[in-house]
Image (cartoon, rainbow, N blue to C red; front, side):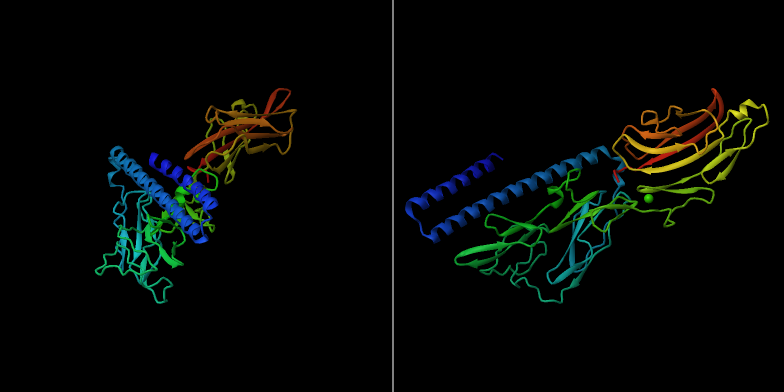
Length: 418
Ligand SMILES: [Ca+2]
């Protein structure tokens, strides 16, 4: 790092010196161009060396993180994906098949890749995407035929050299390619494919831009809603199971298992779609001594009429309604979750409240009108979790209880913020 800083200072000084020299000696335009070119080269070299040290640092960090993960998860030792198939007329890069690791595919010169360049080992121990194949290139390539074969394909003949092409003896991976240089009026101009930046001491190589690192997760303008996979020259987004990648190729869209009949709920269960999954719920009416209930709809039970004078029966809830809500993690609060209203009021007073202590720290019941109560979420939720709140509305006439109406609200919290 110290050396880089020192070199940057040197470059700035170099520029200053250049302008002074130009003013004093009236250097010719050609000399000036040549000097500028020198500075440009110096800057490119600096950038390259900085990028390379950053990349090697990242690699070491990853290696360190992976080794510590292995130490701590000896039980999950077998959590690897099956060995991916090898690629005919190409090569598979990557030897670690653990969850979260990726393998890359590249084709031999003269072949093009059909399918994904990268597959990632998912938590389900399956590889993302389909196995790619290599197809013979029929079209004439725009790239000059003299382009050296990258060293990841062992070439038997030495790479041909040309004045317009840079060659490099450095080992190349799919993330490093030779640049294409052209000579013009004594100076060379090098370019890279999209997604690569020029680097190397003589601008002779192109290094892949790691878009995922440039726009990391949890930052504004991030590329992917969930996981970003860097690939040679590009990147792609991967969603967790239960989601599909949306049309924008960056967002994750929940799969509605209930709608698309991908659920395994039985006939007496109700399928509730949740973010990233689904739940099979069974609505059961309360079983209380002295009171009996009947299901009047899939989500509601009503008390049968009580025998006159049976106080235990008349104090049992008149109705119990069930409400299942899929929500995402870390929603902003306070947030209205649910409203309870009385359709008709017989008594002089309506009371709203929460029953039990479950979920008390997350919920609050507020009155939002003469006949309406509102269930509020007051602290953020982190899934995966299932939370329940029991809302009671009671009706009174001269402080005597006329009726109780219960609503059981169940929240299915997704593990993610989507
Ligand atoms: Ca779902």
